[in-house]
Image (cartoon, rainbow, N blue to C red):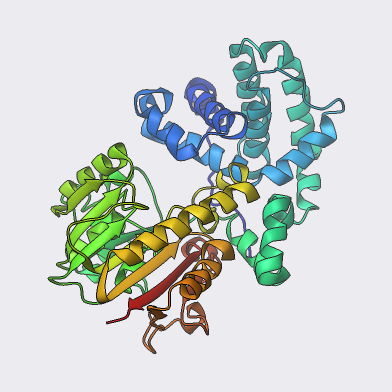
Length: 452
């Protein structure tokens, strides 16, 4: 699979004039993720009133592209930088590492003219009180990167070297070497944008310049701000990966039924269920995340009951016909969209999340009417958060059974349905006519029915 990034050559003149704020924002974001261990989504959220928010649209896109490329290609870039940092990185040097990482990313993978990338990186170092004494080091290292770095990077196996060891070893144990390589290759490519439409997907595919997927999603190549695309203001669609749209569809006809959506924010699955005429109660522990869900539903012209509660303990007045539990997880199936995940998660996190999922599942079962349906899903590639969870649930609860995928599920893609009756998607699946149009999130889903 070819993994050449989707980037354009940038204007060196413009980079020198107004490119510094974009690079500064990128370095700050990388510092937050890699040195302060903060989620990129969280940092971007806090930046609504900060440097990234204040950037012009094109520079905001540039900052995001630099961050994405730096994280996706971090393994290769680190190997190149290590070659030229004879004494290693100095301690307590502020944003020196993010500056070098992002500068090398631009030179090696983004077609930025080296003199522009180097000059701006030096200026960034001079701006940081703790990094400024290393401005000459930045200049020297990035010059060597521009001269010899490409050959070093190209000699490496990008799938292997850009995947942290802990994650690579996990995936090899679970899925084998070939699947692991395919997963890792796919995650090097910037993903397309999938949206779920309230209706008329063919019409919206034409309006958005996209195509309709087997799941009913509309896929397009993102250009510009999402808020400026046709149909956003009128609430015709919402952003949701094709794989993420599947679990709600596994509940079949929910019209007139009482449905609980647990851990519901930001609300994509809630919107699906409401759009299909379900009487939905959306439950989430975070009041702020529920407020975002309500904002999203308001834009879409949809309404659901919302409850701020701990879904491991919440007990409503009456049971539900159906429960959807898209549980908090390691999100390792979404790395192509969230390239910070490998650098924020660990084996210990997966064990902790698996314990939480067990508690959530046990309470979700208690919320069901006799004969009710439970769909459990995670955007994780880790068996502990998927297959093993369901096996353990069935072992401790003989009132449940798996309702296997039917012959027409899921959407004619038989490879997504496992012999046990559950669904498992991988990032390298849903191949279309080019890498930039292909792929999907790695997802697990199981549909269970309570005894009547």
